[in-house]
Length: 597
Image (tube, rainbow, N blue to C red; front, side):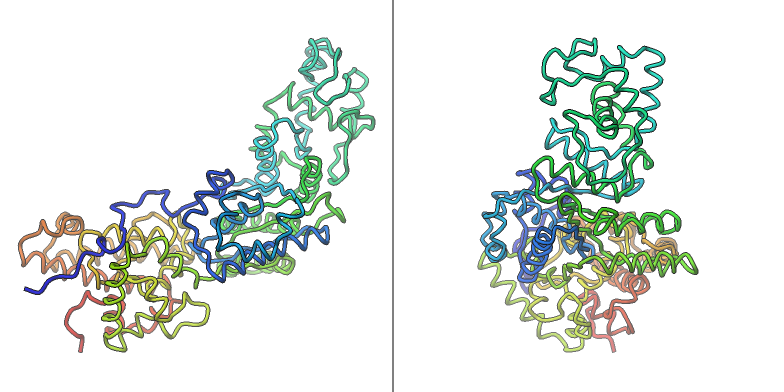
């Protein structure tokens, strides 16, 4: 009896199940020392990523030297590590010990030694844009919330539209009288409106009915960048700002919280960025750095609302230029995106609306830098985090088995390698295949393309981990993960495509698979869903050889069907174009045992 190769789980670590938090990092979680340590623990630094960090730090240095605001798109496919990149950049800028301890980051730290020698302080603000009502609501409101956590004693920046607040103050004066209102404006007095000792500002400032009249009559200042003296306010603008501060802190403490949920509750983004830059400077910072996760994805999910997208897209240029010639400190923005929004506009919007939005986006794109996280990083990252052999002996076994795979028919090898792909692919070479084994480069390319089209909650790494976990009981050293196994996994996640046009194709494919193709295969091979599920988790529990054969035949045919459906969902994948029976067999190598004539 021929001895079977060992199970793959005996050679590499394969989890029994994948949780929702595996391989997923929320940028906001990485801003604490513990979060930074977690982000850096499994982070894989490639040569190309070192270049990316150099680009990002060079952009920040240029902004500081020129005292100008700058912005960069952090561009990469879904699962390319944009959130992780921003988390590690956050750790580098904040001087986190976990970042300084990574020797593989030494080249970039050595080149940018100014990070440690010049004592520059950066206010680093993370954002997750999905669910935002408007850019002002999330960017300006998010700044206020973040600063309150870092500096609870700091004043609130004047980013709110205060018409509603002042209406409430006027109503309270009419109903309760001036002394009650003045008493509620400060927590440092006894309620009579007089400050016996220095108040929280370090000065003996007290409100009077006359000062209230002046503040309430003053026009709201929307121009950012001007310093207002809130300690000893003397001008109408300063009195108004001090009234907003005291009222939102003491008299009506719920105002800021309520305004944060109101898309119309803030000054313009242009003015607001100048206001928060001035506020950051008052706290002793040399630069304000915004890490914006999912901004483009947020707009993409709302692409059907042309007026909304046109309005919000028009604000993006404010991150690099505004009404103020110079902001108090440079504002540097890193905006993660997996697709250029201009592509989605072209697919979903037409006519004059498309032209208008495209012009706006082209204007913004011309003013933004672009840092590209290439897909060719994926093989190294996947190997280090998911596919690394347990020890040297296990690595030798994998190498030996990979050499056997290398000797398969050349046409099969070429198809698995995806050697006809362009330079922007994952990296169609033997070394990349070895790093991602048992996932072929053709599989990786399909994964990247399909993921980039969907609104995914799961990264490519997580999908790979899920496939390994699902086949943990049966996957042996020497087996390859068939491309067709990806289709049932992506349909089971409940994710939908960005664009309406692709949604139609996706839903049609899903309906065809669930209602016709899969039931037909189950009937043809005389198996049941229960038996298929049982075999997937406990293959040894199926002892009937005939039943085992039928299950394997069903699995092979199901993979062929899945590959055909993937070719409709991701026609741009070279490995899935011009499909023939031989290419289908090669992409699912091992599913069809006998050579196809």
